[in-house]
Amino acid sequence: MKELPIFEEGSDMYERYEAKFKALADARRLRIMSLLVKHGKVCVCDLAMMLDMPQSKLSYHLKILLDQNLILVDTRGKWNDYQINLNEVNHILSEELCCLFRLDRMMDDNK
Image (cartoon, rainbow, N blue to C red; front, side, top):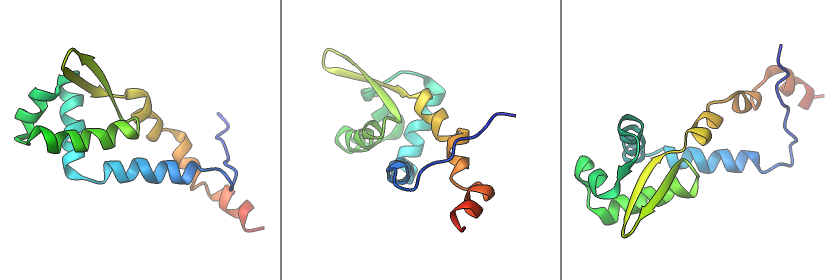
């Protein structure tokens, strides 16, 4: 059986997860990510149309997702294409996060 990692209390891991989950805690950003999963790489102009959202407001939400490395951007001249960062999304859904709440870890912390 694979050994799951145990995290040290002093790490900034909790703050990193908090920031990522804050970025995901918005219905518009979740919809953006859903569209990117469904359509792959999408131009910002097409995303704005799909979402019926002004490009300025869309850019605000895209920046939040970009800052947390949840999406990737590819610039073509004056246009930006966005796509899901599968590595980062899979990492959030990985065993690492479950290790924060492992019962044996909590029991060790209470000793």
